Length: 558
Picture (tube, rainbow, N blue to C red):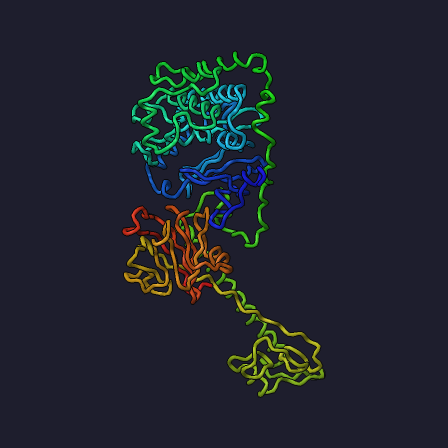
């Protein structure tokens, strides 16, 4: 497997094609907070887009912390950080985008080639320490600095995920029961649940550098409890670390936070040891050997050719970044559409009536006149009787279809020689079905939904749409109703549901990627269409799991 295929993984069936207007090109990986995808800005610059896991997105406290950390991270600007360029803590689901760094993580680089030589470790420490200076200057503490959060670009390291570490505090489980971080790279005060400061990140920097020099965690491996015990109660064993690195690592790994080196001191110490190479710009040749050749970044995914006419009234689409309509606005638009359709039908009827009057006048049928000298005869009583028979069109026999072909001379609109043309009428387009709204529809192991019922929510399992938690993440399932989640959607319309359900075939849909605000289009065997907007998802305890949501039903809308 080549490096490109390792870095850029194809999207899977449960990956959304678009998030907040960003078209996803590949998967970059997954972590405790969510999945990471490759996308591009409108100008074509690659970005890494992290989508938060639904379990966290459902937590109001997480969203509050996430929003606060995004605000702080937006201010961070540093040569060795991956800049945060876009984010939405209120999105469904929440997400953030940073500039994509073309290079492996320190974890991957060490796994591929083993421990790094001393000059490369010095370059690593200097770059990460400079990144910490920029992060700490904005009042942010990383809290989860580790090898996988350090990417190795051709011109130096990049520190990532500094904007969401505090947001996850209290939502990620560790052996300490409430602290955020990776046990093997925690500081003693962090593992003990004490105050976390900028010095905590310096301890993690020392551990990260030791990992790069040794090819393994400094405090060993094993259960989180045992590793944390060694960090809190044991002095670090630096005997296997190359001698030139020991003094600086000892300063970074001091048990007392006040005795640790500052990021500025780390930068100065590394530059003095690197000597003339410190001014080499992109680093010495040994650094470029570590990073290896850059993988070719996939090109931006082109926007698909629109196949659905854009609405003339309202917003341009669910992922275009425009303000989304409320339920009342959607209903008003539907009423306007119905009025326009009704006006079209009425106008068509007037035209048909006017045409009939003109025909009767021209043929003499209205006044019983004979067309003297015209070579044609007036319409006889039998002809008029046939033309006015219910279900027939002028000149057709009773029961014939309105669009049936006519022989010359048989049409009430034509002369005996068949030189006059006929007027074809087309049936009017049906108006959009009337929406029926049902708020707070409940689904659990004992209830179900039926789109054909007057009240869709049922207090038994006899409805066609059911909620099931026997699978991981739970799911909405049905025997015959097709179900489709509208990723990134807000305010999905009837026309959008009807269009995308045409080719839908899934009769069950996992809820692992759903959060409050997620929208599901449904169509049963009788052509009833429903839109279920999730409001509350509680799946932490499968035996007591439930959903609540708002349901709109269009009867026989397919």
